[in-house]
Image (tube, rainbow, N blue to C red):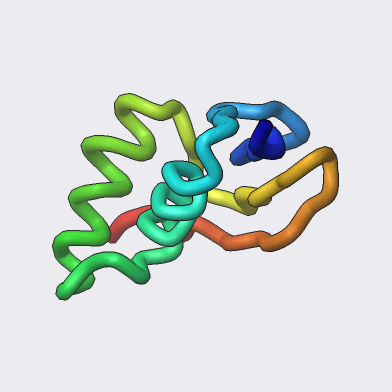
Length: 78
């Protein structure tokens, strides 16, 4: 069985998974790592992360088995 992973903001788990892959990819998307341009990252934040996943500008934590493994700051899109 894979470990439970979460993406948390303000102490609340917004996404949870046990597949070991999807949340790391989403976390990298939030940080802008998987995009070719700042405009693509901005659109992802506006239309996916904020509108559909309910993230907000601020700190997001990548958590596995209750331990914070990484943090990222989501800036408000310009």
